[in-house]
Length: 117
Image (cartoon, rainbow, N blue to C red; front, top):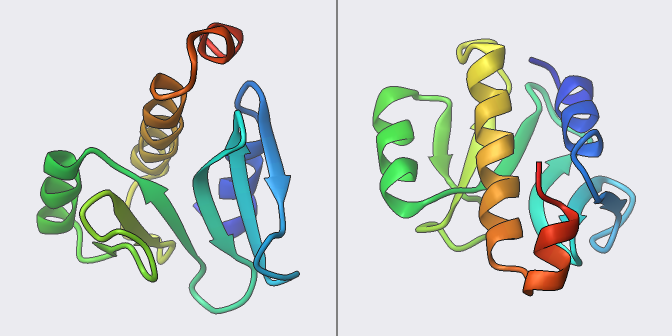
């Protein structure tokens, strides 16, 4: 999966909005006003920061060298995933969905119901 694929997957989620609060070089994806993905638009290979359940985050870091603690984020709840081709596309899509679902689960009920999949 490459950077453009990650961006496409994030935008396709219900209620997802792309924002640039950190400048033009970093796309931030939010649902209900809360961030679920951060995609730097520079660098090779590309990366994506994704929210993650702390236990799952540790498992992913052990299983994949391309998964590290979140760069400039809470390292317990965020992973930085290098898009170097070492992780199957479907697993990266699962990580994106997992991040999105964690954020939606914490939204107020009225918003949460709008974004149910």
